[in-house]
Every structure is written in structure tokens, then in C-alpha cells.
Length: 277
Image (cartoon, rainbow, N blue to C red; front, side, top):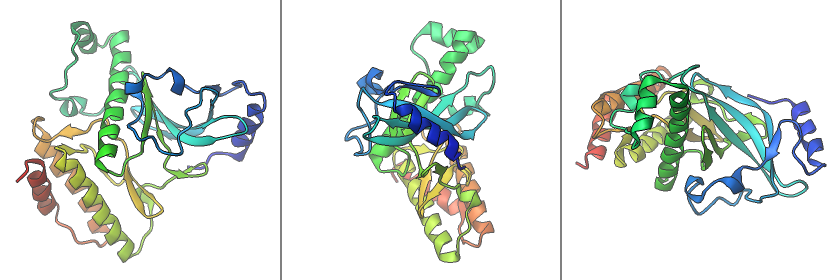
């Protein structure tokens, strides 16, 4: 979605004071411990200066579990980059559909945390949101290192995950579900989706909620988003079922658009990748 030029113009003017103004803050990067920063080598576009200011430019996406904001991290008069800041909500306002299916086997080490999560206390709700942000950061970090087409994870801070913005200017890249493409382009997009699913499977994972709505197409390149619920195919009792669902979701969309694909054949290929056979 496109954000207004007025918001951007106001943010540029407020930079002139070199101090945070309305809808601004000092960059949170300097306060983030190294383990909560993205994997090295850091991309050349990263802004790591302690003098940088984060300016909120608007909402990119509102979802059931989190809202995604477009921010600009910039050193006034010098370097700048636009990033996506995903802010998770506590479970008092939303929760992941079938979240227990995704988190089967995940455990917290502290008994106090486990009890708070079970009771859904105020602390537990905040903890839950932070756990999802941390889970997505960890998944993006691993998948990026493996070469999967995912947004680069810049940092995670409690319930906020800051990552690479996939888009141009102030407009996010379109979802696969909304694009118009000819037969050759669709075939290429299908092969890209299969390739990324294979990268997941070789590492033992499936997305868990893959669909044309969390696959972005940026200048012909497919990028997969929304990965906090990534599932270990082998250890999760629903692993194979979720592989099947991911395959059916994407195959059904491509089939409706004239691309020949067999979801069961793809399931077999991915299961073989996951189990190393």
C-alpha cells in the first residue's frame, strides 16, 4: 500500500532539528545486544549509527497478530534506509489461529514463564507476543543464512521485529494473490515458490501457513514473509499435515491460473528432502 507524501515530507522537515520529533525516536539499534541483531555480514544498506533517528511513516499492514509499520532510519543529512517494523500484540487482543499446532514441542525454560503463559496473565500475554517476535527473528535469521528469499532481519526488541522493507519508495511489493502475469511469468513464479519450499524442507521445516497472501513478488522475485510459526517437520506431530496444507494452498492458486502442478507430488518431494531420502 502507498503512504502519503505529506507524512514523508513532514518527517524530512523534522530531521532538520537533529532530535526526535513527533512519530520519531532515536534508533534502537545501539541498545540491541549483538545476539538480537541480524546475521553477519550485515547488508551494505544497514544504518548502524548511534546518531540515527527512526521516523514512523505509516502502516503497511494490519493483521490479527501484529501490525507492520514503515519506518525510516536515517542520520540527518546523510545515510538512510526504509525498514519494516512488525509489532506483535498480546493475546488479550489477538492470538495465532491454531497456535498450539505450530508451537508443539516448544518449551520455555523458566517455570514462572510457563505458568504465566498457561494462565494468560498480563505478564504471560506480553511474554507470548515477545516469544512470537523472537521466533520470527530466529526463523528469518536461519532462513536468510540458508539462502531462502526472506526479508533480512535487522533486529528484534521485545515485541518489535525490524526487518528489510520489500518494496519501492513507500509502496510495499504486491502479494502473489494480487498480481497479473502471463503464462511464462506464472511458470517462473511457480518454480521460485517450489525452490523456496525445498530450501525450507532441506532444513527440516515447512512454513506452516503458506499461501498467495504471504508471498510477495518484487520485480519478478518471490519473497516469503510471515514465518513466526515455522514448523519442524520431523519433531512436530502435525509436520507432515502442514506440509500437505502448504502444498495444497499454493498449488491450488497456481492451478487456477493455468499452471500445471501436482500438490501430492510436491508433498512427496518435500518430505523426501526433510527426511534426507
